[in-house]
Figure 1 (tube, one colour):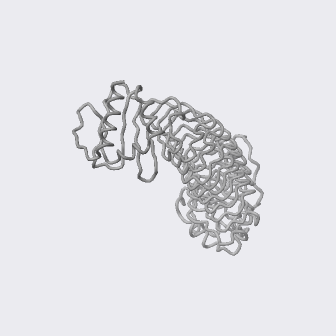
Figure 2 (figure 1 turned 180 degrees about the vertical axis):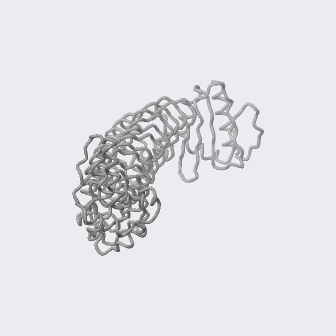
Figure 3 (figure 1 turned 135 degrees about the horizontal axis):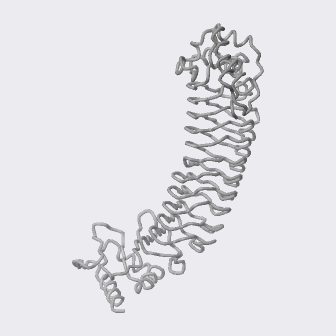
Length: 462
């Protein structure tokens, strides 16, 4: 009680004489008048309710104290640090390092616009965790122990513009956990432990400038994970994704940039991008894509630029785009393709990319499959010489890194004269004798060790 009386007396003294000058005692928490328009109050548990009462009911008194230093005797056990500011927000409260285990809704003024509860002990956010804080524009929950967000945890925050939940043990984004947010500038979810995004996690959320999921160990993006999310300028996914389920982006509409990088996939599955529409840039880059399955891009619609850049690709069953995709520009650049494309791999590319396409800087096995593929004119009128001059050989070893154009034309002619049927891929092994016979045949005909003839002897695992 003595501490509260002293504080009340101090407030009364300052409000009576705003020109009062004094020296802050060594055992007090003080703020210099050279840091105007900010009040800092660091108090014990006993004073917490009193200070909350001031924040809720006597804001006129607090406004009179702006620009002055406030000293409150400090005890050994602190409840928290409160800052109030009138810089970009009319009313801000920062309660950081306060060991809070729940959101103290009853003690928070309904007019707060910036609320920071960083470095506390919040473990989960229940449904309607911030109900009643209708003026809230910025909410910071970094460095808590949050491991779960209940459904509609942020419902009712119609004026929220920035939400930050970073550096927490949060392991998943559950169904409807971030649903219903509107007109938010940034949703920052980096540096957590998010391993999976469940379906409808963002349902009904719209008009978002940035969703940042960087530095999470995200392994799986479930079907419909972004369903109901619309009008997002930038959706930045973390590295290390291991599985994109079919329909992962189904229902995601109107995205400026969707960037998928440093993934480690067994395959890019059929219908991965089905239901994704109106994307300015879809960039898949710097990843191990495994096998690109047929229809991976089926159902993707209205894309400004579809980019596959600097990936490792084991094989491509088909990379088909049609007029229904409405792709303006396609880039397939800098990739390492370990199994040469077959005829029909790039279906429709020449006719449906309305503003053109580029396929440069890639590396392919320079075997008969590649030259039969090129003989089918897969890119329409796009020059074969341009393709062979700006793409490179992975194999054979003696041509590694050199342009495809350096391959001997006689070898290409012999490839085109042989059967075009690809051998079935099985798990049957190969004897040393078979390999030696194949090598002898190839040597006698001047062909490459990686030609189709050797593939007829050596089966390749899927």
